[in-house]
Length: 134
Image (cartoon, one colour):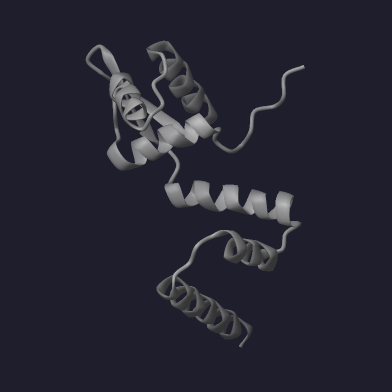
């Protein structure tokens, strides 16, 4: 029995979305060339199949231009990132944002400027929450 399609992009789909967010709209051959540049050289037919699947999932739009199709994202980068991160927070960290931050601090190399910026963002978010309560 096949598993149900994920509401999140697969690794390849995410890679294609990144290409299209940065360079789109693009034809199939241009998507394939961009993937090859990044070390993922896959067959033309596989790119077509994946792009069409992404259209069916609502991730991409497709518009005829001459004999070819142009593909462009129908989802925003921030929207995808927030949904995928939210899913990971729920599934991996049992909904604990604190556990995510602690895990990030343990596994990522952060310099003094990064830490300073994170403190500023945390303080800003805290102030926003206080303002909401008033």
